[in-house]
Amino acid sequence: MPDQVLAFIDKYRSFILTTHDPADADGLGAELVFAAILKSRKKKARIINAGPVPELFRFMDPKKLIEQWDAGAHSALFEKSALLILDTSDEYNIGAIRSVIAGAQDIFVVDHHEPKPFSTLGGLIDSSAAATCELAVEIAGAAGLTLDADTARAAYTGLVYDTGFFAYSKTTLRTFTAARALIERKVVPYDVYRRLNENASTGALLLQKQVLSTLELYAGGTVAVQLMRKEDLAATGAHFEDAEGFINIPMRAREVTVSILIKENTEGKVRCSLRSKGRVNVSKIAQSFGGGGHVSAAGFKSDKNIEETLKEVIEIIQTHLDSV
Image 1 (cartoon, rainbow, N blue to C red):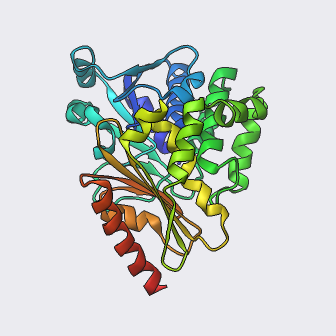
Image 2 (image 1 turned 180 degrees about the horizontal axis):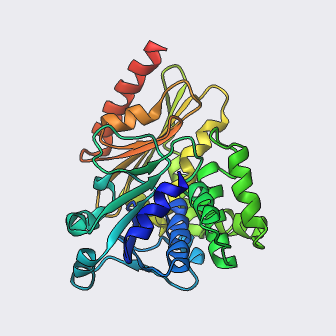
């Protein structure tokens, strides 16, 4: 499979790398690894994402290689470049950049999420991988590239972020093999853990308190729901991305098999995150709303308000629970 990606890279001279919007650690880490691969093969590369790098992940890019989309400055680049889309196979999930991808010389996806039936983009989609950074490290190895310390740390950050520090169900020996290769490049695991889990603002702590206070149980206590409104962000001074890990808190209860977190950003746009212990395939549920993800972790954007979104999600989850 790495040969397939390297063959694509060898066909073109100039590349643009992008990921889903908003970006997370796995998408950002994969971008930085692929930028290093391209540089090692004497290719031109620019990383351009629809939105800014979230504050939590800025340490991953000390050289500030990742740019934010600017239509005036970036649009013309696509006609002269091939496009690598990382950590998503859904062209509707890359934000404003979607408007110009048709002009790229070619498009190739590298992703580890469940394939989406409506996606028209091709490439390497390996849902057996625990993270796109896992794939990126394998491809770097196949290319004969030794990652520098900064890039290795970014890749390790993406790897632990998408595996819950090696706790999630898709973690395998393959995952630890990639992690070992990165630690051999002098990555310090505790440094990454501290930056991800011991570096939040007081506002983020207050936001967690507020969101947890909304916790409600459904389906005989097996489905947990939390809600976050834009007013909560304003009241606590926290950022939207500060709520990323809140979805996992109810999963600590043995009776809870599905966790739902419905979040509203400062503009009033609604997103829904889903987690499962395996009884319910939340990827299929997310896909029914135009989203996607994994069997046990998925999400989608909603054009409805929080209450309407919650009503529809609970109904479809109850249907899935009744069928298993």
